Image (cartoon, rainbow, N blue to C red):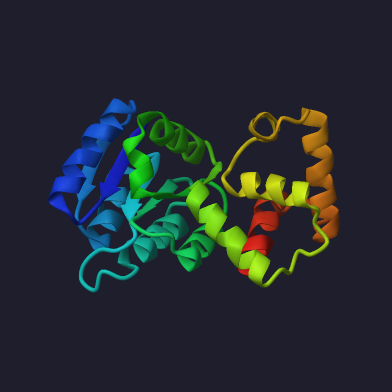
Length: 213
C-alpha cells in the first residue's frame, strides 16, 4: 500500500513513517503542510493520504481542508485524518466526503494493529472513526437527541457503524448473531427514512444523519 504522509512536526513525522512502514505501508512522500500534501498526492497518486488536521500557517484546519481537496480531485485516494483532540465538526466534514475516509486520535496510531487495520479499511473504501470520537458524538446526540426512535441496541449498532465496523465485527462486539445485526440495521434505515437507492450508500447516510443533527 502506497501512502503519502502530511505532519508538520518533524519528530512525529519521522515516527509515523516508521510506524506506517511497520504496518506494511510504503511511504512515498512525507511532507509538512497542506499545500505540499496536495502536490505530493498529485505526483505520487498514493492509495491513502495520512493527514494531520492542524498544520501551518494557522494550525487550525489546514490539513483537513487539504485532505478534502485531495478527495475532490482524486476520489479514489483514501483519507486517514489524525488529530490530537476529539473535533466533532471535522469528523462530520470528513464523513460527508463519502467512503474511504478515517478519523483517528494520534494516541491510537501507536497501536500498530489498529493503524494497519485502519489503513486497510480506508484503502478499500471503508470508514473508520476513533471510538473516543464516536463516544463524544454519542454524548452530544444524547443532549440533543434527534434519533429518539432508535432503541438502545440500535444506537449501539449505529455507533459501531460510525467506527466503520462490518456486520460481522458489530455482531462480535455486541455478542449478537449476524442476522440480528442485519435486522437492527434495517430498522435503523427505516426509522431514519433511508429507502434503498442505487445512487446512495445508506450506511454512510445513516452515520451522517446521526453526526449532523
